[in-house]
Length: 247
Image 1: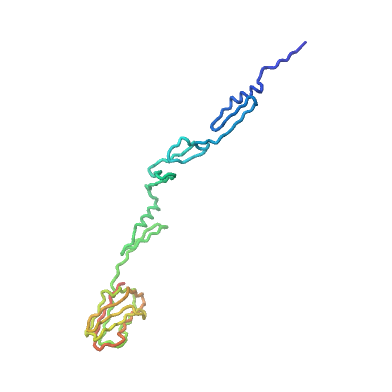
Image 2 (image 1 turned 135 degrees about the vertical axis):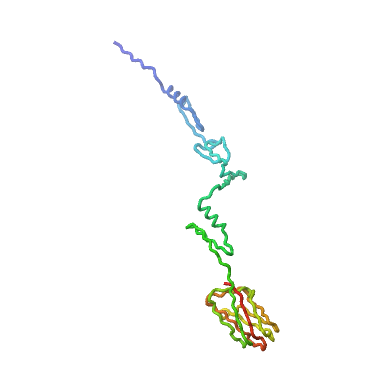
C-alpha cells in the first residue's frame, strides 16, 4: 500500500510580502518604499516644508489654511484686536463694568479737598469721611500806651492762650498816636525774643505802617513782645495799636 502526501495550497513568503505592502498606506509626511526583489519595505517620515508641525497650535489674527490647528483672534464687544503694525497684534479692552473696589477707588480719587471740606478715604474699611474745615476766625490784639515812650521800654508781653497767625505785612493792623513823632521811630515786634516785624512811625506822622516779612504763627504759649524804640522821641506819645490776626 502506498500513501502519497500532497501539501494544501497556502501562502508563501512572496504572497505575504505583497499582501503587507498592499495593506500599508502612506499617510501625511510618510513614504513607503516596497522592494519586491529585495523583499524589503522601508517606511520614511519627512518634515513638512509648509504648514504647521503635527499637533501644533497657533494663535492667528486670521484663518490660515496651511496651519493644522489655529485659534483665530476674533473681535468681541469688550476686546478688539489691532493688527495695524506688522508682526504685532494688540488687544484693546473696553471695560463696561466696575468691581466694588474699582468703584470705591475711583470715587476716592475724584473727591478733592476744598478750602472748607477735607475728605479722608480709607480703602480698608472702606469709608470716605468728610470733615468741615471751619473758616479762620479773627483774632485782634490791642495795645494802649499813655505818654511818651522810654528808651527800649517793653510795652507789652503777651503769652498766647491759643494758636494765632499774623499775615505777611500785618494786613489790616492799625496804629495811631495822639502826638506825632519828631523823628522816624520803629517799635519792634518779637516772637519768643526774636524780631518778626515792626510798627513804624515816620517823622511828623500820627499813623503807623507795619512790616512783617512773612506770615507768622504763634502757638499756644508763645510770647509776643512789643519793644519801644532804642532811642526815645521827645514828642511821640499816647499810642493806640491793634494787631490783626486769625485763629
